[in-house]
Image (cartoon, rainbow, N blue to C red; front, side):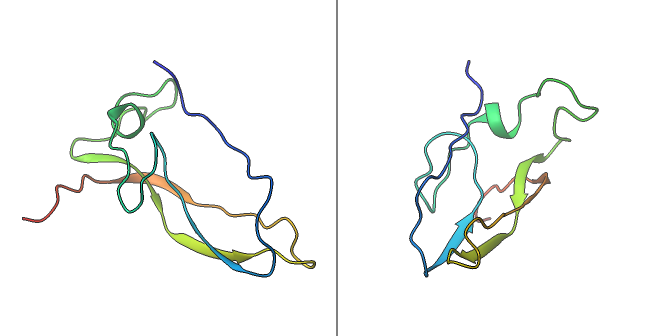
Length: 91
């Protein structure tokens, strides 16, 4: 079993608004994401709440847009990481 792989973006277009969405686990084929339990539901090492509560999984909150230009060459983007209800699809 392997853990998450962190990537680093080295080049982005300048002067264009970039829509940024957080995701985790597997290959992202938007709008679909991997639902691998390794990332979303299985226990993690350490922490006081290493397993999501019943009926919940790990998730990110929000999205944002940034523009890279001469004044803003290294924008920082932050997300809230929390437990969210498991999406069971249409009822």
